[in-house]
Image (cartoon, rainbow, N blue to C red; front, side, top):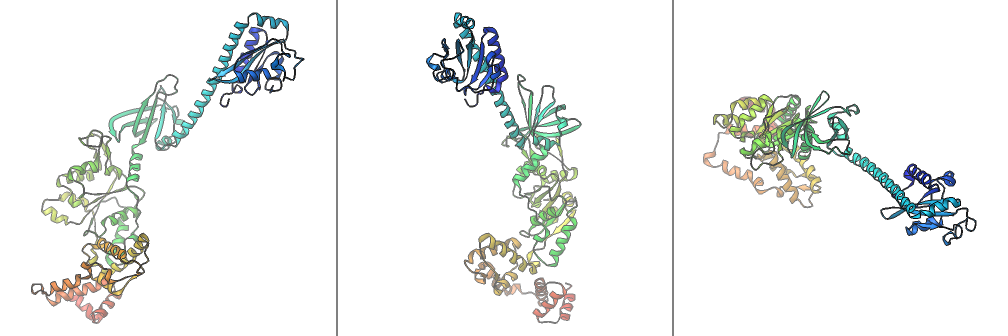
Length: 585
């Protein structure tokens, strides 16, 4: 039978054959189910490992029928007719018994007499000899079963070890003397261990704090100490090489994995900040200058100017680019939940909390950058807690009494006037100064109209790929309308407008003014109507100043741009410079 082999325990089978031969004083041979001689004594001793198919008809019958056979007249018995020794057999008697395992015949034990004395001894006590033979057959079958079980266990253990080595969690098996018995690849990698740490003492100290359904442990191996999150399983000692198994993840790795699953790393260089205006070029230079600093940054600007883009660019250009960037909108989360969102909580911290606990955003961002968007909307009573975190570089999870050290760079952003909020007692002055170490202001799109064309070209290219369109350009009239529009929603509004126009373009290759949304298309006419109202009349100098500024914003404030602006305004370059001086612009 496949899977059960007498050959695998041949040495034991040979011993059983010798025992039978010594006790019964007869020759013994034991064959497997394919009639290969596994063991033999006397005449058969030198013929072990031979196949006896040509002369083993009796054994073949026993294997096929599963019953013992007594051949008192070898060479003449009907079963012997096909044997090569039929008619001239040297045997006097043959007793054969099947070896059964799980209702399968895996071999035969044969007792063979070669003289009258041996024959007489067997015949006189045939029943007792037959019972003894059955016992030996059972012993051999049991031995095969034990061997096969051990082999299966070895394969299972080897396969299990391969699986254990391939899983992401660390596994340490510990013996009853609190020494490391075995360790998987993940544990070796996470804890930076070597083969020499096998059989080294290990101490596992529970912290009695739970996160994500697992307990926190301090684990000491040699002179090293680790903070781990996992499960310690106790095992019965009987028949086992180890008494405990620790299945874990290093807390640092767990946070990294949680960050990877939750936040996609978006590496954004300064090239992604579109524009060629003086203010944007200065902004890019400033980002590169402060990217590697540890100081907090406060980004201000109107809604839609791209404050998160600037924050991500600082991250990507700095020395923390390979570490987490975690963004949170402080205005989108109720004040009652903000603390648990930012600091996290342990198991059972409060009613309604996730029973497994939760890692806070500050922990996820450790060693990297946390971006606190809409910081101006943060509740006043929570601002003092953020201030404390910035000052002490530590947090404490809700429900825990253990502080966690932080190495996080904070970038905050707002579209509100924080100084005005301070006057209204809606924002802490000390937090403002703690955040505003490096201020960055993003100018609105209406103050850098020269960038609009650059942004439009890039966005059209992106939307072409996204929507499988083939827009090649914007016609002159449409471009003029879009550049003259003040874009109160800034870049975000411009993006949405272009996306709308491309969706409406059908098979057109050129975006025309007819595709522009009505509120933008008619903006100038509506504005002129407003300006011509009697109470809206303003001095000519004020209008001229604004018009000169708009023209320079469009053509650029460098020498080349001023020449183009003067030409468009219908004045000489010297006149333009004189007006700029007189208007102090």
